[in-house]
Image (cartoon, rainbow, N blue to C red; front, side, top):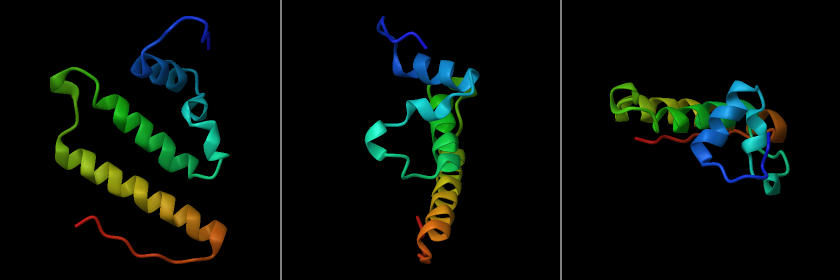
Length: 90
């Protein structure tokens, strides 16, 4: 991706998703210490919220997808750290 000229974050995210380079959008200071699957899901959700009003997900859908991303992230953390944590957004 050409970063020489300014680009909006939603345009950058969309381009990276289309090119299959979603992880390039992640803050490098995270040092890869995050669930790539949850990151992918969260970025695509965020991008879907920037579309035309009729195409945006409902708040119920947003919460559901965020809960799914959290579940995935916690599952991946558990695999890597051998710990089990229960969290509810309710």
